[in-house]
View 1 (cartoon, rainbow, N blue to C red):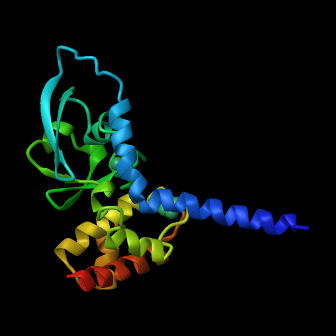
View 2: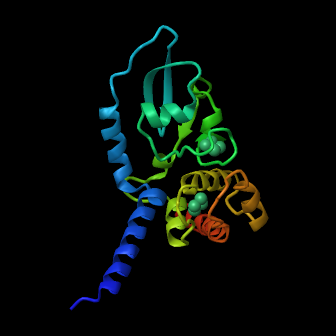
View 3: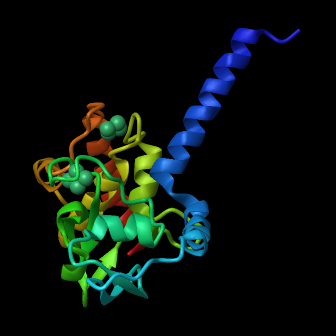
Length: 206
Ligand code: FES
Ligand code: FES
């Protein structure tokens, strides 16, 4: 007869893995979910104060009508269905919403969507290589660079920005590079290890 404790342990392990896989990895499902979310986005009501905007996200142009007060975070999540970018404090303190704008890490919650016109925006979904994880995502997976995983997308984007600028950072440079990303779980040691591993993986594919 099965030991129910073992079954419970197995279930916990599986559910943790599954959750982490969803958050940190983004994985192939993310791409699919983006398309589903786009298809399901309710028909947008056009109000007189809306303006036309084209955003280039992960290499694709998206033509939108937006209110000038809308943040990039709102537009990515609510209009484009790109939920890899997380909504945390919404006041530029936690880093959960970090995206790259022209390769530089920026908080999407304090960036107006209009400000991002004419730039190249990269989100967590854009780090995927087809259905494979990008090197930074892979490194976070390998090194358990998370606990609950909520901060992970922002941490991953900041590490990506750091390594694009400095492919071989010291530990101090890693700490500084992701100092704008808070982890309320305190998973910093593994996050730093993941950043080091990401540098190795990026070098290996160069
Ligand atoms: S949600 Fe943008 S910094 Fe916290
Ligand atoms: S892993 Fe939970 S907030 Fe960082």
